Length: 588
Ligand SMILES: Nc1ncnc2c1ncn2[C@@H]1O[C@H](COP(=O)(O)OP(=O)(O)OP(=O)(O)O)[C@@H](O)[C@H]1O
Ligand SMILES: [Mg+2]
Image 1 (cartoon, rainbow, N blue to C red):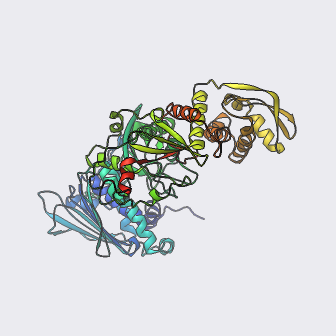
Image 2 (cartoon, protein in one colour):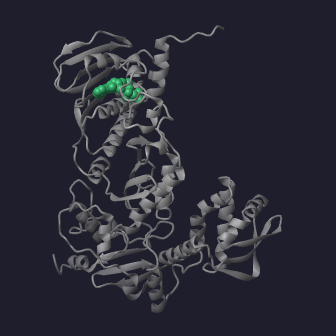
C-alpha cells in the first residue's frame, strides 16, 4: 500500500473524535471559549442529547477577519510559541475545538466586538460561506445543530438523551463550581434548568450547585494553593460522585487527588461512604502540564506528592476544626434556617435521626447543625470560628452512670450526653497507636509465650516479606513453620487477642493489592490499628465504674477528631436540656 497524507476532512473527523468524545465535550469547549473571551455572563441551551447546542456570551467578540479564521484547524489567538504552553492563562491553546465542531455539524457563529459591527459566519460540515454583517449584541453566540450527522459511528455511541443531558449538566455544574464570578444560565427544551448568578462566594455557589452544606478552608504547601469545601463526615454519599477537582481552574479527574481526599477522611467514613468535596488547586504554571489529554480532563503534576499532601492536610485541618466535633453547646439562636436545605428543625423534632437513638445510625447533633448554619448565614464560613468558643472538654462532663451496659450517661450544664463506651475507647486507643507510630516510638510488650498464628503458606510469605515494616508498627514476628507464625511482641496498648485478625487482614490486603514494600503497609496502618483497637478495648456489655468512665472521658480529650470511632461510627449523641424541656412542655 502507498502512503498518502490524509485528506483534510478525514483529518478533521479524526480530530473531532478526540476533542469531541460526546456532546458534553462540545458544551465544555464552547464555554471555555467564552471564558477565554472574558465573558462573565454565559447562556447555554441544549437539546436532543446535546446534538443541538447554543452558547452565547458577553465576551470580547471577534472581528470578521478573526471570525473567518476561528474555525480553521490550528488557528488560535491564545498562544504563539511552544513555551507559551507552560504559562497558559487560557483554557484554549490548540486551535482545534471550533474546527473539530465545524467538521461534524451545522455551525453558525454570530460575533460582535464592543463598539464594532456584528458578523455572522455559517458553516455546513466544514464548508463555510463569507461572513455577513448582522445586527447583534456585543459578544458571541455559537450555534451548533445536527452534531455528528456525518459520523454515524459517533451517533451510534451516543447514549440516551437523558444520559447525555446529565453529562452536559455535570459540565455546567463544574464551570459553576470553578467560577462564581461568572453567571451561568442553562435551558433545555425551552425550560430554565439553572441560573447561577455571579458575584456570590465560593461556598454560596457550591451550596447552590450541589445542595450540600459545606465547610471551607484553605492551605498552602510550596507553590501549591488549595481551596477546599468539604461536607461533614456524617453527610455522605454511597457513590463517589460528588468529588470535584479543579486545577488552574480546569475541571479534572485525578486519582491522586481523589486519594488525597479519602486519606483526609480516613477513619471518619464507613466503608463505601464518600464525602462531597470541591477542591480547587492552583500552582505555579511550570509545575503542572495541562497538555496531556485530548479533552484536557487530566493534568500532570511535577510533584504529585506535594499536591497530595497539600490537599489532604487542608481537608484534615477543616475536619479537625469543624463544628460537628463534640464542641458542646450552641446558643439557641431561634433563627430560621436556610430555606433551600432540608435541615431538621428542633422546634418540631421533625428530624427522623432524633427519634432513633440508635448507634447503628449516624446521629446528627442538631444543636451543632443549627450553629454551623447560623454562622454560615452570618457569612462567616471561616472554619476558625469554632475556635473562638471556650474549648469543650469531655473531662468536664459529670458522669451520671452507665445504661444498657454500653452507654455512659453524662451531663454538662446544658446537655445530656450518651457516649458509646466501646466506640469511644476504640477511638482513644486508635489515636494513641497512630500517635506513637508517627513519633516512631511504638511502646511494645514482649509476650512471655509467643503467640502462634496459623495462616496459609502464601500469607506467611507475604507477612515475612514485610517483617521490618511490621516491626515498625510494634509487631515482632518470626516464622515458626510453613503455615504458622510466632508473634513475639505486640504494641502495649493492644490485647493479644486482637493480633491474629490484624495479621490476617494485613496478609490479605498486601496479597490482594500487591505489597510494594513499606508504602503498601503504610496505607494499611489505619486499618490495622483500627482492627487492633477494636479488639483491645472495653466492649459493649461490660460494666464500668464511675472512675473508669471518667478516665475514658479524660482520654477522649487527648486527641482531636474524637467524635467517631475508627470505623466511622459516631462516638456519642447529645440532647440539649432546652430541647428536653420543650418536649415535656415546660417551655415552648
Ligand atoms: N466565544 C468566543 N469569543 C471570542 N472569540 C472566540 C470565541 N470562541 C472562539 N474564539 C476565537 O476563536 C479561536 C479558535 O477557537 P478554538 O476553540 O477552536 O481554539 P482555542 O480556544 O484557541 O484552542 P482549543 O482548541 O484548545 O480550544 C480562539 O483562539 C478565539 O480567538
Ligand atoms: Mg477553545
